Amino acid sequence: MQGYLLNIGTAAGKAAGRLGHGILLAKNTVTGPAFIETSLPNVYSHWGDFLAAMRDTLIMVLWAGGISFCLGLVLGVVLTVARPGGILENKPLYQVLDKIVNLFRSIPFIILLTALMPLSRLIMGTAIYVRGAIVPLVFGCTPFFIRQVEAALAQIDYGLIEAALSMGCSPLDVIVRVYLKESVGHIARATTITAISLLGLTAMAGAVGAGGLGDFAIRYGHDRNMTDITWTTVIVLVIAVSIVQTLGGWIAKKNTH
Amino acid sequence: MTDTEYVITGRAESPAFLFGGKALIELVNIVKEFKVTGRGEAVHAVNDVSLTVEDGDIFGIIGFSGAGKSTLVRCINLLGRPSSGQVIIDGRDMMSLSDKELREARKKIGMIFQHFNLMPSRTVEENVAFPLKGSGLSKDQIHKKVMKLLKLVEIDEKASVYPSQLSGGQKQRVAIARALANDPNILLCDEATSALDPQTTQSILQLIKKLNKELGLTVVVITHEMAVIKSICNKVAVMENGRVAESGDVFAIFTDPKQQITKNFIRTTSNVSKVYEFVENDAEVVRLKEGEVLAILHYRQPEDVSVPLISTASRRYEVNLNILFADVEIIDNKSIGDTVVILQGEGDNVSEAIKYLERHNLRVEVVKDARISA
Image (cartoon, rainbow over all chains, first blue to last red; front, side):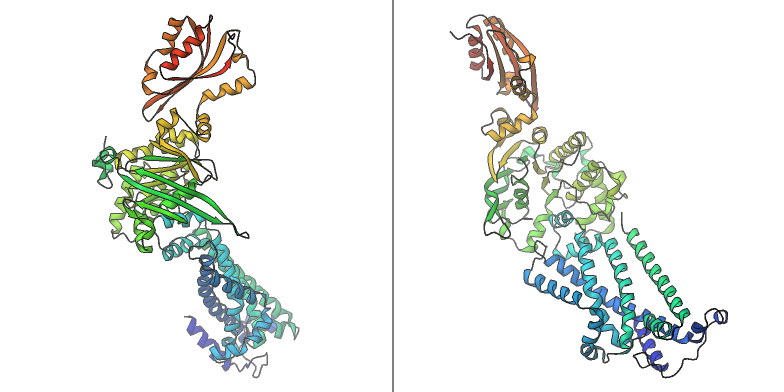
């Protein structure tokens, strides 16, 4: 599903003739539904770009979010069990990982975007488009999520870990059956917060020509003073944030007793 | 009794007394150090402790907080590995086991905790089934076993409820059922009743006693309350500063405590100690007239309680014994008690009466003396 979206996304991006850095080579002629023609004239005339921007944002959030979720969960667990007093205490590993996380958390995302261009070319084959944004988004998002996971797991009472160990659980059992299972609610909340912050990061990814709603709003709404585009974008983002928040809250609630 | 219905392991057919006397848990010269961060020195939480728990015992370890008792009990299942010493359970040296062997061994040592430590996202049934994963039992067998265990601890009607909906006593019952899931022969109780009210404490203690009798379960009880020791244990070790100050049969310890800390603990359970307060505050009830003696009669032998010593002394030496108050306990099925009396009589009669009582194995502790010295 995600792979499909990514392929379609880049293909459509190319087809639309947009080659990054906000340069529009060929005007997208798709128009919006007739009822917005008078109320939102610019959104109407840039409807194709608007849809592409939404799709690009979605692809970036799903891909970068999906990868960050997996990486963050694993590394958050590693930090938790390797820390002094943890069930698989490993001081060197903990210290190194902890410092790396701090390092990436302190680099402003806009710098990360350009600094990681060579790495992005190496991994994804390009440093532009949606594909080019995935690597910096993952690097910007994962350390944040690692800390969120760490905080979520820290809420598990050590008594539960001790009880599981006393019942003959292996460290892996403890991780899966206690740490992860018992913190599903906390992790759902952490994921919500991270996903929404990632949505914010994708707006900046427009700087490498990835497109997306943020880029769309700046390019048209701000630079060309098309206020209706700015407002429409904001409303779409509000709706997106609300959906993520509601979904996260629902999962968290369902798993809290 | 419908014992057989509740038989989980089959061990119930051979009650504890049949194989009592065999050492089940042996702790030899256990030392547990904790490094104080920032400083080089180590703190000895447990300092050279040796204990033997026999099969079928309910062994109490009592001490104030910080005495090292919780650290010590964690040395039994190696939740906290001793810095040095030997842990031998059922003849096996626990410290030499591989990780995998240790995990298998832990399944035969149930443990319950002060704060129950139930998994909040799992129902009662799922909590009890937790240790049964990977046991090779089918889903159906697990369900049956869990329901049996829940019946055993009398909480089967709450099977589908989440722990947050249970009271403290109910949570501890579930925790006990969970601890018994792998048919252990040892149950470690780490302050298991310290978070419960007195009435619930009693019901949990009675449950533990029942399990000890019916399943032949050997129990180690960690507590800071002498009342807990008194009501279920047959042996006790008193811990202070990481060491065992005194240990032995509960009855012997209660009747003849040697160490000050033991005396302090016993005092907490007895009304008789109030007499010291009264004397200190010069209360009306302990004010003596000339020739009177205020004394505590400590009964040290179980037989003594049945002999009418007070009446006899009173008649024979023409003294009046005014019983102010008394505290008679049943410990390990034997009665033991202290009586606070005022002795009153002519001349040397009071002293003679005291000598008579002492001859009959009563310890007479004179608290306040208003005899006219000869």
